[in-house]
Length: 513
Image (cartoon, rainbow, N blue to C red; front, side, top):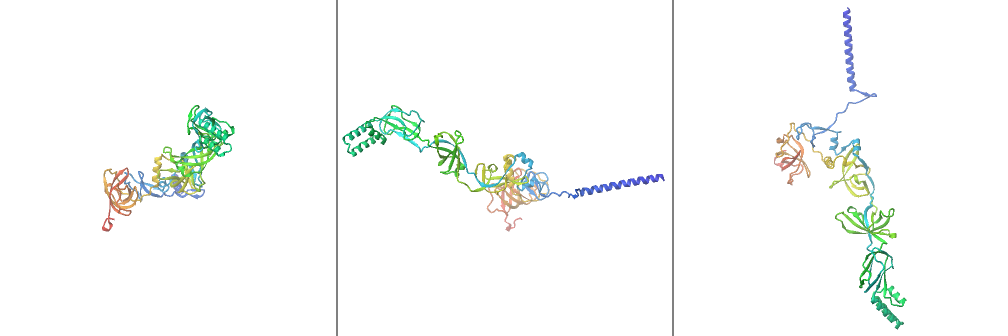
């Protein structure tokens, strides 16, 4: 009896342990299926949606079913709806906030406003060539005394420049005194004598001096006709001068020119009469105001600039020729346009592109039509809307310039039609091999022809839709989208095939397909 009791107790203990373990496993299983957080059931993770399958080495070709790749000896890889590759395929690039910070990505908002059309340029001060006085000898004589002896001396109007002895003047003056003494009541005779003094080269002031003095003046003073700087000094003391000989050249300084170099892309904003403000380093804090008097009709082939002649008042004659100056030209006020920082605009040579921020760390390129640029801002005529955000810096740090352009090209490529891959493994064909196929043209562009073709036995390909480079000689005129064709092609490069011959099939005559 004691032995039986002990066996019964042991059996009961074993049964209870087995039941407890079974209940524990059941509870654990149900807990996995119905895990809760604060009493709310957490649903099991949803299965990711597959958009298509592709070969990572040939991402442009897409397939609607899994299987071996027709290009490489490998299986096709699925692309899911929320993956980065699917975003790339849709023209969008996703960049994490941390990566944005590392790359220095900075955003700027598209705003509407008036483009600051102020054009900045540099130039140098020059003499105003419209304010020039040339002093000449009015008759033959001898320069006995020179009072202004060096070039670039400043002179004032009426200042004596030289003393000239003119024998012809002496004879004319003596004749005048003789006529006045013999015929004082004959005005006509006196006027004739005055006229002979004028013909000898005397001016009215000199004639008046002779009349008032009552004696012959053998030596006459040559005076400055205007104030300025003696830029040319031809006269020398003791020299013999002839009638019409140049003695002095005087340039005025009440007004000066600034010859400013205007960039070629700013020429359309500038015209004669445009207001100008000039500043110089030598006269810090002073602003000289003037206007454009002339745009010289010649472009410098080296600097690609056009010279604008600016006329400025020169109070106190502070501006001197040769002085360096910066000028701000202010054209007429412009209308409101969309504005972005000029640094956000990518010029590829054939198009203008900006990187548009979609939010959530997603970006995509947008083609725009850009207008004028000024003061670090560019006008956008088409392609953007006010309030959008564009990448102002960091777009060139995503990769090198070449890889960035390649990324743009991949993002802008339209997706090919999804074909069904062959069910057999493929091998890489030889470059020299020529293959024949039959298919229907789905799309024609300048650089690619999309064809839905039948299986290609020589490559062990199944039926699919893919792109081919067009024939080098071009397509026949009767081959259009929808045409059924027979064609030959070969491998032109890694993963790229080019058509060598193509012939249209007449379906009405009983052709295939």
